[in-house]
Image (cartoon, rainbow, N blue to C red):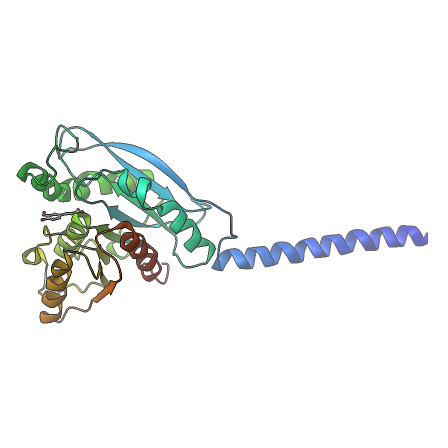
Length: 274
Ligand code: FER
């Protein structure tokens, strides 16, 4: 009899302990993903009306996707010689994002890595500085707005308003982020430019003050030969009293700066969930 009581007391204790551990794990999951949980990177193909051909992008989905009801979307753009694979191959975005989620420092978001050179045939030109290549980087604005964003919104569990849409990139992609983001403040709520290139065109920025941009964030290496581009953008935004952040850090035109850019920019965006 005594043994029977002990047995049931033991079962009750185990059950109680299990419920406690489960509750603690759930409470923790709301602030941070347990370390070790990993996101996923998938290559996607979409048809571009802009170029008339299929184009590709990579998509990072965070640990647990699609657990949250809807996710924000951050578009992450590459540099002059790159393609949709550049960040994936050199920037360690999956590792950076998985670590940020494990630390509870990133809102629910997916990252989209497009090919930022919209041309047909779709290839890296022999001379990435050619007029043709430069035009393709500018032409990507149309592909992004009319082809890629609708594709992502159709195929992923994401919000579709500007509050939950951001854009950032390195070098040429930094210039594109400033041009497209500040050119369409009604479509993007945050812009990050890491070492923006000479394609940065302040003439495209909407500075009439009607739509305020919650976050404009520029980062450049102190020894980057393109530092003056960041300084010009900073001076332009300051002159137009547009709130923004401009940071420099030790480094040149390199991945140390760009990885730091992604790592520092992501925790600042899409704050407040809904
Ligand atoms: C230039 C120097 C650098 C330029 C573009 C770049 C358009 C881009 C560099 C990169 O993307 O890494 O004069 O002109």
